[in-house]
Image (cartoon, rainbow, N blue to C red; front, top):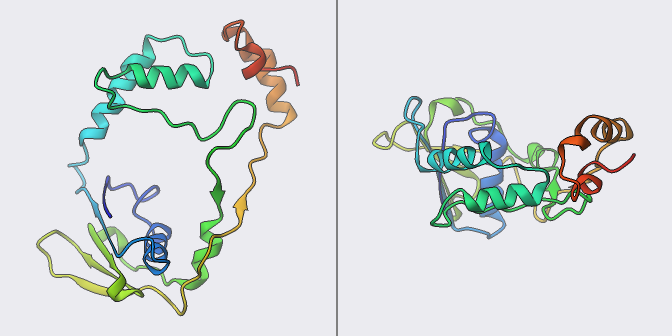
Length: 192
């Protein structure tokens, strides 16, 4: 697997992400993973243009519910480049499950010191306890051991999705309902 990311430490370039990649290698999901981060100041790439197309369509479309957002995403490009994938519904149905990866992985892995200075990370089944890092693509590779002992197998506990509390439901019903189409009011902002 080859992944190219922007250089956002909060979302992509962090120790939990590195632990997760090594977990995937150790659990046989991949034989190699390469994660590369764009250099600061060079973080504009093709997906940014796709988000721009969506934002342009969103500004001129009346959106009242999740289905409207799906249609807006799909209508934002004629070539079908932008595709929507919902993680859940207004009724609380969950399509994507969330797991407590941090509690599951943190005890088994060491912190990668200096993570912000590296731009290329390679994980391989040949070195199941380590990551090879490079500052730049032409820099020498440095192997760093991350795994403390045995890698956990299986999956962590699921994080339950609790939905909106009564105060938030009441707010939506009082303040937002009027902006929804009559067909979606009871779906998006039902009475609490």
